[in-house]
Amino acid sequence: MQVIGLGTDIVEVKRIEALSQKPGALSRLFTQKEIQYSLARKNKYEHLAVRFAAKEAVFKALPFAEIAFKNIQVTNLENGRPQVTVADERAKDLVILVSLSHTKEYAAATAVVQK
Image 1 (spheres, rainbow, N blue to C red):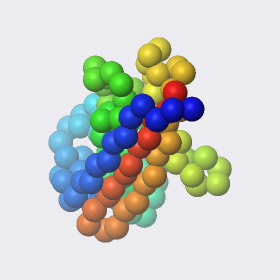
Image 2: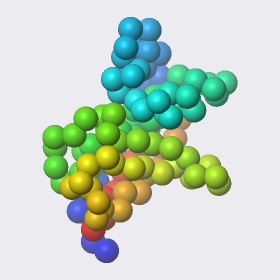
Image 3: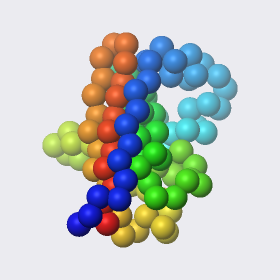
Image 4: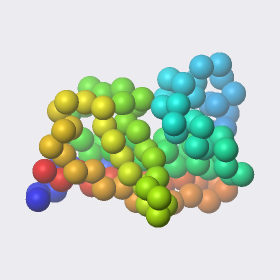
């Protein structure tokens, strides 16, 4: 496998908290699965923010630029490891690795795309 893209992003948690107060904002950016997962957590805005950062990192790493944020989904495997799926035919042969981290103030993510 060859690395074809690398992306990283950091976001302030309070920015995503403020964004989430706007009607329809969450459903424009996140899948229903991401929203349900994050809102069920104690630190819901941290979880939303780290997913937003992951989507940005993946967007930057992908070899094509036209993709909706909602088509990039960040979930967790049973062991807690993050997993990214991209709902786009152009991504079918790509392997996307992502690392997530968050505190009360910031959320960060790095994505590597391989083919």
